[in-house]
Image 1: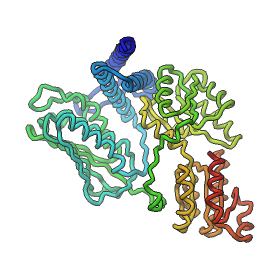
Image 2: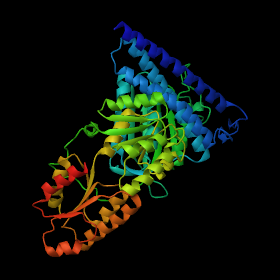
Image 3: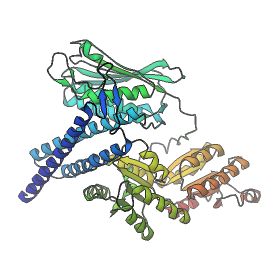
Amino acid sequence: MTKKREELEREVARLKQQLQKEQNKNRQLEEVLSFRGGDMTVSEKNGQAAPGDALTKSRLWSRISHEILTPMDAILGMTDLVLDTDLTEDQRNYLEMINASADRLFGVISDIIDYSELLEGKLRRDMVNFDLYEELEYDLYIAELTCKHTELTFSAGFGRGIPNYLNSDPARIRQVLNTILSNAIEYTESGEVSLRVEKSGFDEKGRLLLKFSVEDTGEGIDEDLQRSLFMIPAPLEIAGSDEKYSEGGLSLVVAARLVELFGGEIGVESTRGHGSTFWFTWPVANPAEMYMGELPADIDGQVQDRSMVLRGARVLLAEDEEINAAITKAFLEQYGLEVVVVGNGRQAVETLDRESFKAILMDVQMPLMDGIEATLEIRKKERKKGRNTPIIALTAHAMHGDRERCLQAGMDDYLPKPLDRDQLVEMLARYMTKKALVVATDPANQHEILQPLVAGGWAVIIAKNGQMAMYEASLAHFDMIVVDSSLPKDDGLEAVETIRKLEKFSGCRATILGVGFEGEEEYRHYSGSGFDGFYSRSDMATELKTRMAMIS
């Protein structure tokens, strides 16, 4: 036990030393940012940041982010692994402090990168359909948990009439909201912090305006300081306190620029001794109407552990940083995955020539052949074989266009470093889960087809007509497509023919089955249109299980 404790203490000392190095790098960055006549200066007249030449160059920021975030990934990952072991109370406290400091440092670096992109007008916007309540659920839970630890009361309320589904960039909404919530909790010593989300009319483009208001019972901010709150620099004194409001400085500036970029407004209302209310408005659009296909009552609600699909699955990890590779391999093996590690893109391509994997985790920046080049080579070979292994980019690059370059090269998804363990596991489970598209108009037939698929652990999407089937197939690859005879003949025929044409571009081929086709006339009508088989309704369940086993 003594030997194990000594090893842990040495590991703690090493991690603290590594963290100190990264903090020194961060201080150097801050000195560069504050340098007069350098790359980012502040005008005394209007307090607006003027973009310079060097730091706002994407290539430099890409390199900076890689050099800093790569070792940070190792620090966070290693401390997580050590925290999962048996530790003394002091050792656990030391490691948790390292983790907290690294998280804080990561936040500062992210703010600097975001701000440089905002100055260049290159910040990426990912406009997607999303559920507002689901997006905010986890963040509000963390806020409530943090308040409990500091003996504050937290509450959140949503006004009436807010649509369930919206279209905007949910990650940026959460970024702004978390900045404001974090500051409110940190600078409120007693009382409560509350969030209110409500409708606030419409903008000139007809988009619904959501207003987010965060109210706290802190000491408040003096009126003369409120005007410079969203400008650089922002070392604001809290009323009645000698403490500087420095933590919110750059984060609040980034939050304000994000709100403006998306067409909203941001502001603060505060009176000394009576707390503060930070608010911002955010325009959202109604997502395009589409049929999502609800599961029947007796199937909907069957919750499965998505990590079950990971057990025993083989994953190829291409990562040139040995520490990061060891950390990622270690925690994936905790979920029962078999992980094969290679050090560069060339080795990844060569390994895939000999072995098969359920998924590939591909670092972007590697020697000899980087992740982009390796992915292009892998996809070229896969097109000849008619298969498509999910490739997930792992990268410390955080600049505009990085995600797009990864996807354009043929990667399926993108995770920034430092890696979020839960996010990586969820993404792997999602891509390893077999997917089926059920095309059926009649609800009873939908139910009948769904049962063996859901029971087999497959993810299922329902399309009630051929047009929706073509739309869904254009968005994602399905392992199996089941077309029911309840569709009009020409509708189903057109859908299958179009899907087969789409597959010529993607290089992936789904198994397409027709069910409920009984007569000879129907067989002749669909013959040669791209179906892989036809089954009567009585044989459907047995045949689907056989096909599912073959695909898995």
